[in-house]
Length: 166
Image 1 (cartoon, rainbow, N blue to C red):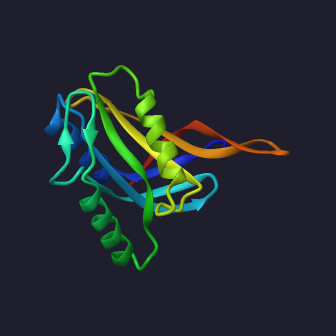
Image 2 (image 1 turned 120 degrees about the vertical axis):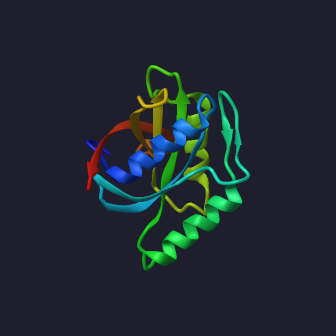
């Protein structure tokens, strides 16, 4: 996982910032789809908002899981079964950093344990700040074995670099 780069198009990043502005001062978020180019690069090809039944609160938001699953399926079909769910994004309004909360870490663990997600790594992109000045922080999580002789897994979360493409 050393040196992971998450690639995102400028229009997609601006779409996320527009959603962040629209729901401020409440949190919002959604899902990221794309593909893992290799162990060091993931390409985000589409971003989706929280969905019409999402609940936006000051310090949290609840996904519209049914809507998100449908959108992921549509993107999968549209891309010729290439683009899949690669992670989530959400906002931390008025925060000074994109540091993950305990809730964020539990969400990453839940996704990695989900049979439906079928991921060995998952992204979490956090927009932090306030309207017109959102900054992005990206993390990648995966389970690592504690040792060669023990099956216990430890959640490893590392920073990733966010790189724009046009």
